[in-house]
Image 1: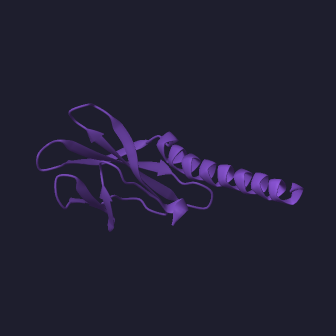
Image 2 (image 1 turned 135 degrees about the vertical axis):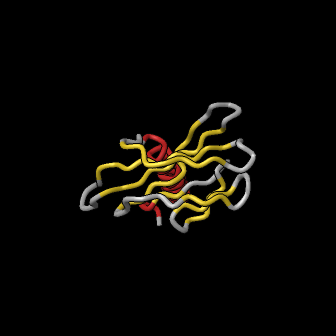
Image 3 (image 1 turned 45 degrees about the horizontal axis):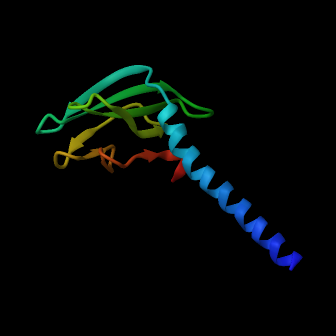
Length: 118
């Protein structure tokens, strides 16, 4: 019986740890602030704006690009793209909610790209 309880506790702790890592990863992306404005691009219907910023590089990277998506109706802005060793942002809209940034396809409503998780 004691062995089963120990296994259950170990499994529960591992699960809590794994879930905290998932939550922290997105939070870390949201905590990044843009430094130097590069450009912006609006969706065809004008509902969303993607803004690109150039940041001083992290660790060994020369530069990093951060892109934010703003819901123009609510004013809510969230980070959707973070890439190191990159100094530009090629932003192309696929439709009113999907954007391609430097070859990465992102739904601006609920997706994001963080090079640290790839």
